[in-house]
Amino acid sequence: MERSHALATPSYRGDVDRCRLLCASIDRFVSGHAMHYLLVEDRDLPLFRDLEGPRRRILPESQLLPAWLKPRPDPFSLGRRRVWTGMRALGRGLPPLRGWHAQQLRKFAVAAVAPEEVILFADSDMLFVRPFDLAGLERGGAVRLYRKPDAITAGMARHRPWCENAAALLGIGAPSYPGPDYINNMVSWRSDHVRGLLAHVERLSGRDWVSAIARDRQFSEYMLYGYYVEQVLGLEAAGHWPDARELCKVYWFPEDVTGLDLLKSFEEVLEPWQVAVGVQSFIGQPLDRVRALFERQASA
Image (cartoon, rainbow, N blue to C red; front, top):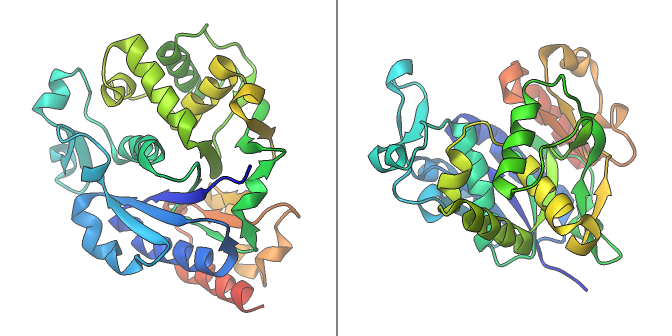
């Protein structure tokens, strides 16, 4: 069975130039998708609008998240940061949320409403550097799910709350360690399972899914989806096949980029199965260097 595919990218004004580079790389190297959705805050729409095209659509947050959850200037940062809150959100028991929380909620929302059957998430600080057809996500009628076995251990203080929160939201037993990791830069979901996941969370909690998920700030969208399709549905029944390979080579920390300025081509550092590179925006690597490497790759 041939499914329809889309890409989705949450972004914001601080990453707009990186997002432009991502879009250029998708236009150059990626095929097999009906649409690329850019998920942005409403105030950022003018900054992204010129990226729209026949296969790229800008979705403002107001079309994805409830009206009672609004971004506001964070008074504790003198307005430099944003915080998602409001009287009705606080009344629902939600703590003030940060941008990364809102981006995770947008992913659930777009996958729940998009007409495409498979959504591949591509962060705005990554770019494709090799040809990639989204049809390659499918194998024997099943959709790829990034899953790294035994990657989360009991000593990983940051990850454990994500796992425990996901288990509680889904009404399954407490997680055991070591356990699988579903967090990566190129993760594909089935839209029908997202709708099933959100309905499952609402039934168990008696709350709307945004309130249920975001009442505890320690949540991970990828862990929640992974736990749902593996432990509630079962991977085979859910039509997913697990893959521990990372399709995107990521530079997470400043020390990771040592030697990046000496590269003549991304081909020097990519594994045979990798099709993209991610350079985290917070590590200070100049975008011009990344763009120059991409342009060299694109013209090859």
